[in-house]
Length: 329
Image (cartoon, helix red, strand yellow):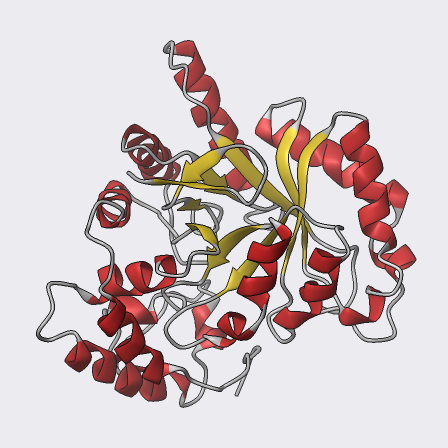
């Protein structure tokens, strides 16, 4: 496993992190035994960064992570594992509507209560990184929620503060970075969604902000395992993500990438991760991991040679300006 600086925050993290959404649910059937084994295997292979959220199974993902951390401590492991979690806005539209008030969606009372829940689920007395789980540009002129989080940071309940970008308007966090409000940003960046490279990633690097990349596999499409006949479990959110004609359109574009990789040593999932890691602003990429095989395959990518600059450039042509699609067609 290779390690990278997490912005300018004085520590390094594994460049392959553990994306813990699927172990919480919403990706089809998932057994806790598989989840626990996957976590242990990833950590054994040198992964030191885990990303989870309140919404991943209503705390289920966090509780599993907390269990693994306790088991490893009890076994005498002295490793430093960095856990990032997320607090969603209070009940309302997702993403927040332009006319929503930050005081209603991220009030101090709400943030304190939710933080207490995150601490309890993880079984810790301090969150390494607490991220707001979405944002709206409408609050940039007065980012009051981050003022509250800075107070919680001063109280010692939070280590670092971050934001997970709103899918439809990722550039809305640029002002937050320039204003010094966040220590990290979590962004969607992959072979299809290349917009962050226009400005967001460079600003993060200039401001010393740690960058966490999510959706590197485009919710599984860029692993190359889907066909036009692929069916998802009834409780799998990808039934909406790939609704209508989205899946066949995506499969066609994935095959174009596969052809570009024909004369290389990379498999599709390896190339998807290595291409993301080619950008120097990226601190860690967090592919979803739900079993031991995925932990081994994803962690192994770190030790592959860096992607040649010519191939990085070639794969840029797969930029797909589809913006972001929400539920339904």
